[in-house]
Amino acid sequence: MKAKHRVFLSPRKGTAWWLTCGFLAVLTAQAIAATDTGNAPPPAPALSWNIPTNITVTTPPSPPTLDSLQHDFDVFSWQTFVALNWPANADGSPNTNMTIGQDTNEPVVWESYRESRTIFLPGGDKPADWGQNSPLPPQCDKIDAKHLPPGTLRLTQVGKTPNVLDESGEPFKTGPLIDQNGKYARFSILTNQAMFNYIVNNQLYSKKGQQDFNADADFPPTKEDSQEQAIMIKTSWVEMGGKYDPSKFFTTWALVYDNPAEEPGVKPSCTLKQVGLVGFHIGHKTISDPQWIWSTFEHVDNVPTVNQPISKAEYNFFNPACKDCQVNEPPPRPWNPGNEYTQPTQVERVIAITDDANQLNAEYHQALNAAVPGSVWQNYELVSTQWPTNAKSKTDPTGVPAPSFLANTTLETYIQGHVKQTSSSCIACHNNATQTNGKFSDFTYLLQRAQ
Image (tube, rainbow, N blue to C red; front, side):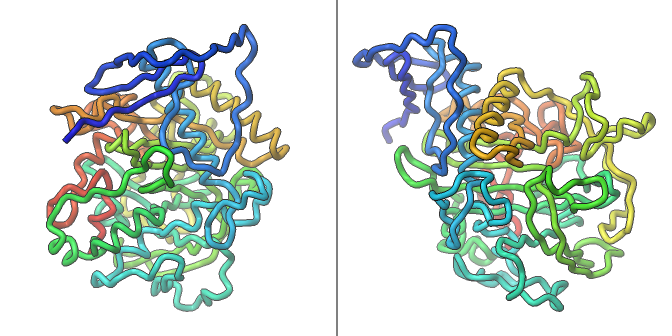
């Protein structure tokens, strides 16, 4: 098979670049007029409902460096974040008559995606078709689904361990995250329609279907100038009220329920609550990045950074007044999300956000505020983007990720750091993911949920 190359077009230099087999090669192209930008500040980022299909190299130097490519992948992440959080029509498509942040009471694009627990059903049952409502979990039998607000989430997951609503088989120290109100943070994992269709069409939603499939999963990648293909999203949430002001968060309504079958001692319950977004993680498979592009965002008030000044009086997951709190340690067992109060988790960021990412965050915050003054989306920041620098490597199936480590403090709270095979790395970790039959699951642990 002919090797595929990643092609980058640089409008500033009139040269096309490709990244292949771990090195940068230059392809001479017809020169175009260069624009002398002088010392002018960079233009404000454009906000668009279009999900990007690949990165575009637009920054010096020539040829691109690892740092300049990191910047371009970070731009890709922000473009994706904006598009996914664009106001949506009833069918989940972006409302092109509005802009991001314009109406915080209406669903956004990603809220039409399917939550994993409506895909992988008890007994391996086939999930409801795309666009159809899935039945509520048994814990919510007293709630009338017809009267739920549009975009209502179903939040049950409280951790990443085998007996606490596990979405994965990740072999790391982990556990639930407790917010400053003493409540369990909640999590959800969602797929877009392309990913959902692949699972359903190949019957990967059941153990039997995976056994019959008997092959490695290969989700459809997004190609240049085509509609986006496989995208999955992980989100993390805290209940509004107490120390959390809803005006500072993107909020939605969620069925928050506890399942006694998933943790001993938990009593069944289901309540409709307003929740605020604190973490947002995107995986997007593209034709140039078969290991997927991993983008992670957080609320700006989540945590301070190790060895940096504690600049805020309050954080979402850190108490500046607590001098003897253990940092980045899971709460002691037993874990019961039904408890009225649990000692909050003390969290710090281990790997600092880079200066370049901070500058890019500031540029997007300015653009968001210009579009909608006071936009709630100014309260979210890109942590970083992980991407394969050598996607076609013959010896490393992870594609030599950059940066080597990436963690969201709400999703990989207890595995932050710089230690290989121990600290959080999206690509390296998900490279170990398999289906229930042991076949490769294409960088997602979701298929292990099949019953």
